[in-house]
Figure 1 (cartoon, rainbow, N blue to C red):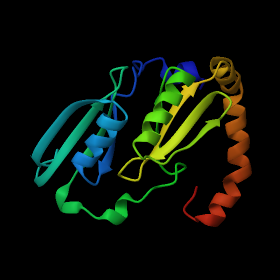
Figure 2: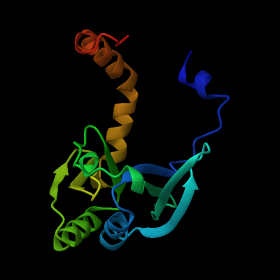
Figure 3: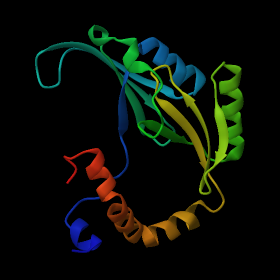
Length: 184
């Protein structure tokens, strides 16, 4: 079955409405995303029942980006444990926020540095340039801008993506099985 056959009957995914994460404290999260990163503080929804029913007190925060999409957080005051919110390696979890170009990337670098936020970068990944920091919840935040070759590079990568993935899967399957016997 080719890609067209698999997706022909599905409506298109229009974008990411929101990505949601846990936060240690709603106010410190608001400060970082609104005051430092400049995202619009769009909603603070307080609940006393879980979506599936049953008692659960929590707040759901939403921060709006210029494209209309959101990054969101859950504050669960009865499940607070600072150890759960230590910085996590970006290979495990991170969010990449796109800006228009290098001038905007450097403006974020300067603003975040002035606010005392520790940064890495900019790092040139070929198709994007990025700076990295951690939010108050230990989530790596990448601010990224496309390079001049962005679209060309991604088009070239798409043309060989299935072949590269198949080669990777074949080359790493035995190592994964050795590390985790439940790996199929």
